[in-house]
Amino acid sequence: MTGDQFDRFSKLVAAQTDRRSVLKTLAGGALTVLGFAVAGGHADAAAACATQCRAFTGSQRGQCQRTCLACQQAGMRFCAGTEGISCCAACEFCDTERGLCFDNCDPGSCTQCDPVVGQCVSFCTGCQVCGEEGQCAPCGERTGSGCCTPAGDCLICAPDEFADCTAVPPTCVPQPV
Image (cartoon, rainbow, N blue to C red):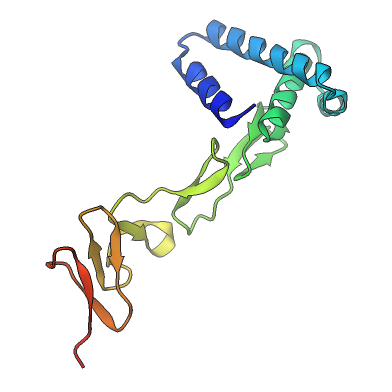
């Protein structure tokens, strides 16, 4: 599954309003993935998924195997447990007991996992920097010298400079000696 296909799939699922429509979409997509996996010479992947899903019975086993193959096709990690069956992005970890994915980004880095991209991305908005304890702070608060530019970026000055936020555009100027 390409990034564009995953985006379209995500939007389609998000737009669905009733459970039956979502399940039909998932089942159809998963069957397609299963067909491509087996027909495309990915019998090893199907066998690996069958092994990983052997603890499940009946329709849950089928759902588990389809999800496992979809995870492999999307380049994500398969995660199954007592509460769920899901695909984890590279920036998430799998709680193997419960089968749920959780953000694995550094809590002090002002980032959160973006499962579509598979990377930790900043949640600070324009004119903010990552401050103490992973909290976003206004420009200059952490360094003592900085301000917001008209473009919404933070102007952070060197220790021997201070921010002239009244200049157009804002600029760093040397500290008087």
